[in-house]
Amino acid sequence: MSQNLVLIGFMGVGKGTIARTLVRKSDMFGLDSDDLIESIENKKIKTIFEEDGEEYFRAMERKTARWLSQNVTNTVISTGGGFFKVDELNKIGKVIYLMSSFDGIITRLKAQPNAQEKFNQRPLLKDINKARILFDERAPMYEKKADIIINVENKNINKIINTILEEIK
Ligand code: S3P
Image (cartoon, rainbow, N blue to C red; front, top):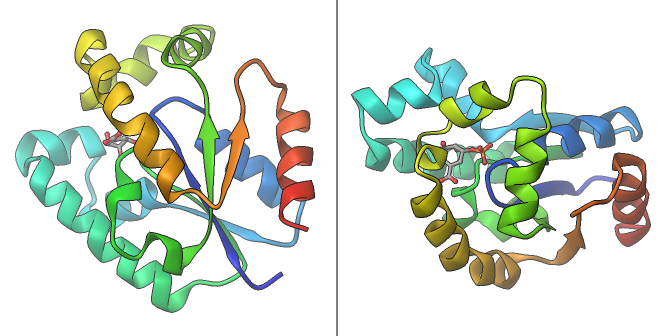
């Protein structure tokens, strides 16, 4: 398989976990847009938001998207929750929207052992009411950008992976 898979979806839906499992179960490599930005900036996303502002971060996402579309193949790419807005999204690869309700995402995050950290490290998840508004605004946009939509709510990871592998055959 030479095409990339681009995982999009709201914060906390499980893009990273699903990408890592897909990498283990296929011959594809894996990258994460936030990790790429953190490594080149040598700062955590939270610090980039605080010191450089959200607009700077969005510009870095667009730069990362251009690079990915020109240089990367056969890779599962997990992305930050707002990455789907970049122009090149569909040029990077097949876009998979990992879909869940907002409450499903919050329940998933709260069930994790390091739940508080998961909330703290995400600037746009700190205020739950604002996050819900952002979710409602973005949900239809994720669907529009997606080649494939996978409902991940209350599904175990093996079921999700098998569904994705079946869909991309
Ligand atoms: C963001 C999601 C975060 C990160 C940044 C902004 C967003 O990534 O890119 O905090 O706009 O939804 P995760 O979706 O991995 O939390």
